[in-house]
Image 1 (cartoon, rainbow over the protein chains, first blue to last red):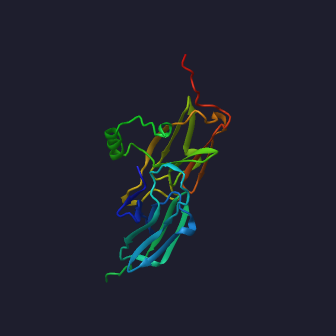
Image 2 (image 1 turned 90 degrees about the vertical axis):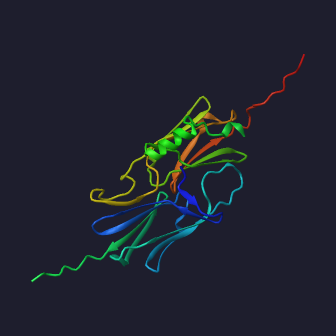
Image 3 (image 1 turned 90 degrees about the horizontal axis):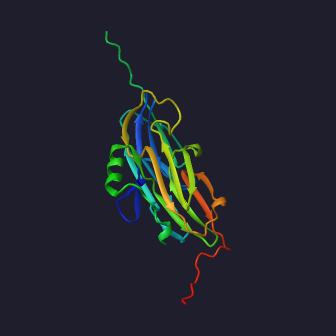
Length: 110
Length: 135
């Protein structure tokens, strides 16, 4: 099982798990072997974009199953996503991006 | 090199159905060789070093462990509504036959950035090939 699917030779798509809680949406990207400085988390046109590069400089591999090079993944965000509240952390090869949710305004029915 | 080919117990079909049913999976592995050692890199994001077992027995290196669902991340796991699960969970095991010139008692392993790296230093002294004279 690999942790990415390759759409083209140049850019691979890392696998992700997505769930929601009471307070936010959580996106967990599988990025084994990727350093923190090589990952960019951004918002564009209502979507969450994670991109970066897994750089491989060595040439002494006998066998390669893991993808390397540039990667990119985009998720569109639901309308109640709070774009002001985005938190990202990379730990043990797993990038967690937490996007807050704007609570719905309760309208009292008279 | 023949010796560093993975030694999978399950055939391709077993592998496919096991993965599809979510019972087990096969993590991706890179193998490298330097002048001094062999390196095996197992991609396993979101785990702890305690989750792995690394064994070397009669020339065969076996890496096994379990990536438990809903335990890879911190915090409250109750009340989560899952939208997408693409990464692999469950038990895994991969085995490799290491070449004869590996020093069995000096294998090392470390878990960093979601990759388990196993280092198998070579024994430079050990003669693994020998010419046999024909009488």
